[in-house]
Each structure stands twice: as structure tokens, then as C-alpha cells.
Length: 301
Image (cartoon, rainbow, N blue to C red; front, side, top):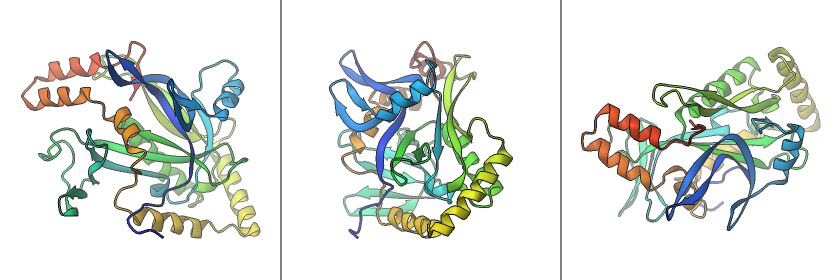
């Protein structure tokens, strides 16, 4: 195994809530109020849709795609979703500093160093450009086509990260650690806050699959776990392989993927608002700046 290269779950597509569009000569993220499943291929119009996107929309019978049936790859919640405080260099697209609120890995002239992490709000090094960033890997459906091929949902939404982290821990607990066998679905929810001036904002939740109660989902998970054991499927070994793979590299994102991540989640326009904030702008001004960046029909939280 190549040292220094994080071995991450195989990705066959992306789950997004919006897209990147060109506006006034700048490429900026535009949020949406529904899911979109894309492949890993881009053309001039943006990311090419994955065939499962059309299939799920047909099943939605003309409604917006706001739920996706999924299963998880691992029993360990922290393997399914990795969340960090991340700072990227906008000019090179490379990760500069990644931390968890206690320790961080930071790149410099002498290589990568391990330092204390105090979080993004009071970090003088980040100067307001660091934010929470998470990656969730899921298998769409029941893995009929590829049981180990995952779709990745990337997000910098505190609402989404906090909700998904809680759900993963709770489902793991109530299922007796059989998280990878639970029939679940991603669900897009809306909410209004004072920060959004009561405009609708959207975040991602993880719930029991439609048509099932929690008890039925747990029963299904127990049955699936027994079937897998009988067939020789070693879930514990899969979790351990993933754990070692993540630990093999300093940063999870590949160099070829980072530019797209920076473009979508760390747009250039944020630098101006960050500077205004650190120069003493009032709370009202910061709220107005935040709301002005929201599209008319709401944005992903």
C-alpha cells in the first residue's frame, strides 16, 4: 500500500443539493431544494447525471427528489461520515489545515505538522476561512449493482453534519451495532431560522426507509446480518480495512477532487465577507450579508 495516500471507499457518484453556475464572470455555488445524483464526469454544463437519478425521479412520480433509499457501508458511524474543520488554499486547491477541535494536521515548508486545534471561530491562522466539512458515503438502494460502490455527499452545513452524526450514532446503538444492515434513506428537510430571516433553508437527515417502523428496520437488520454471516461476509474485517485505509494518508481528499470541493464549498466571495467580519462589522451587517447570499427559494443549510 502506498504510504501517505488515504484509501477511501470506492466512489461511483455524487449526491448534491445544487450545482456550480457562472454568474458575473464568477463560478458560484447555487443551492437547490432537492437531491441530484451525478456521475464523476463533468462537461461544459457541469456534472453529468447518474442513471440512478432518472430512476429515482420516476419513482418519485413527478415530485422533487427529496428522499433517497440507502444503506451504509460500515458498522462504525465514524467510518461512514468523516467530519473535520478544514482550511483549503483557494489558489492551489490543496488542504492547508485539517483539525477536529483538539488537534490538527497543518502543511508548511517543513511538511505536515501536528498542532493544537482551537476550532475555526478563534483561529488566527485560518482568519475565518476554516469551516466544518464532512463526507458521507452511502450505497444507494440495496447495492444491487455494486455492493461496495458508494455515492459521496459532501457538506459544510452544521445542521446536516450535526443531524447525520446524531442519527448514525443512534441507529448504531438501537440496532446493536448493525448499522451497515439497516434499511435507511436520506431525507431533505426544510427549516427557518432568525439567521435566514425566516427563509426556508434545507439540510439532510437520515431516517428509517419509508414504509417501515424503527422496530421493523431493526428486525430487517438482524436478518440481513445473519444472512451475511452465513454467506461468509466479514463486516468487522471490512470496517478494519476502511479504518486502516483512512489512517494511511494525512488528508482524505485526492488532489484531483479538491479543486471541485473548493469551488463548491469555499467560493471566492466568502473571503470578502470574512474580511468584513474580522474588521468589526456589526451583527446586523453580517446577517444581511448572509441572507443576501441565499437564493430566493431557500438554500441548503
